[in-house]
Length: 264
Image: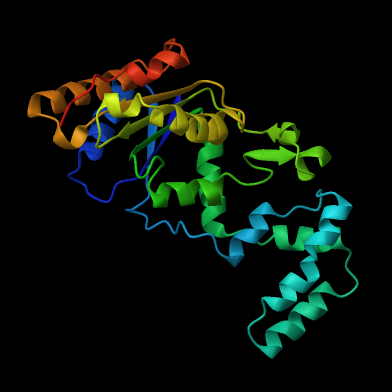
């Protein structure tokens, strides 16, 4: 199996990097093909900018929504100098809203297309990062914002474009996703509802909604205060997760308890 791991931690000496090393070693021991995207190492820009509008624009958007979007005015308003506006007016002259949408779509950012090509080539995905304020770190959250785009990760029916969440069309077909996150606080803290909230946002909306049904989320609780013995236990677990990556996994409700708690 070809596994793509998206890794988000700035420190090459961090606990998360240790998890990455051991997980990758386990994958390789099991005969999987492993590729890692180190978001800090490649200096990925997580900030959603004007360029990223193209990633969420499509000529297949319902006509009434396209009319409301008024893409012609948006393009012209984004021009920063008179010559640029003149060129934009020429390019848009005589084009319908759908044709303008297609033109905008053709200018998706190259860095996003490169990331999407890596995702599309993988059979399965893994994510390794610390938990920041009940979510991924900003660089990884921004990666999802910019890469999990319309007509790549999901599509929308007409009903979806008009607000019905059931109109979301899942497009990702990966066999599974494994999320490995380290935390500051212990398991008891996450038992208060925090883990359920994270699971709803990340596991459900982030991965199952776009189509990946086999989602496992492993927490390395209280890793910051873990003893050397506990760290080694966690790293052995990361290795085992790599070695057993394509084996049947426990049901989702047991995933949160995979790692025992460590009290600071």
